[in-house]
Length: 301
Image (cartoon, rainbow, N blue to C red; front, side, top):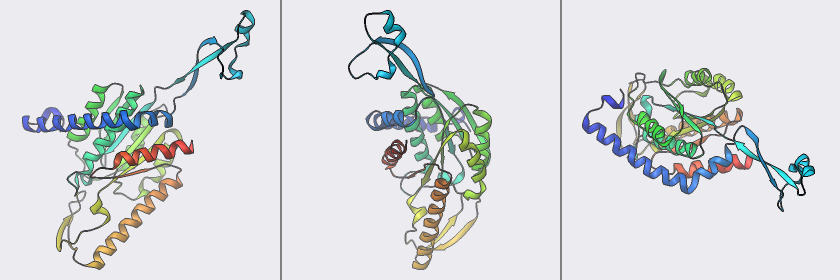
């Protein structure tokens, strides 16, 4: 289902959400992220722009000796960065992204994160595209520039009704290889409710050509169960129901141990592939996570 199939009330609510995201993320981009994004994600290289008179502090190696020899002054070559990067937002819209215990679904966090990254990109004159996926490719928006395009991407992430319920990260990575021939910065936004072993090989292959950044979206209740007594839970991706005794300390401890082990294996797997990942949670705090990621990348490069 697309935005144009929504009812009037649903469309108003969607526009309200988009406007809120636009206002909040624009301010955060201007205040914190745009400059860091520019310094971390470099363009394709430097190209010659012009020659100008030498000024104190200019690099001697950039002196244009041919022009200098023909004039009575020293001239240096000036270069500009060739930017125009392509950013691809690869957003998981499987059923598990509808979960959220802190007044916010993981899918809403994914949309806000995508907005931050997209606004940072277009502010630096880069192109942004979108791939929505579940256990199949649901929707593709080719890369373009401009604020209007970014607002369209946010709308797609929030409003698109997928056909699939499960998650196939490998399928999404394979699709990226087919649609992006030039080097792309790919933000892979997912809760990764699938073992890394199932998509490690395609991830390794894609990461040789593209700059892949896994963004792990989590909810606090996925890491630690509250004591709510006997609770009927459902796997959103399979629909399988299961009764869980959350009053049991042993059950809660075992659940927390399994969740911690899952997180550790996932992050270590990304490190093994030499990928810098970002972990965010529902309920806010994701801006700080992105800032820390940019700072980490800046130090490494």
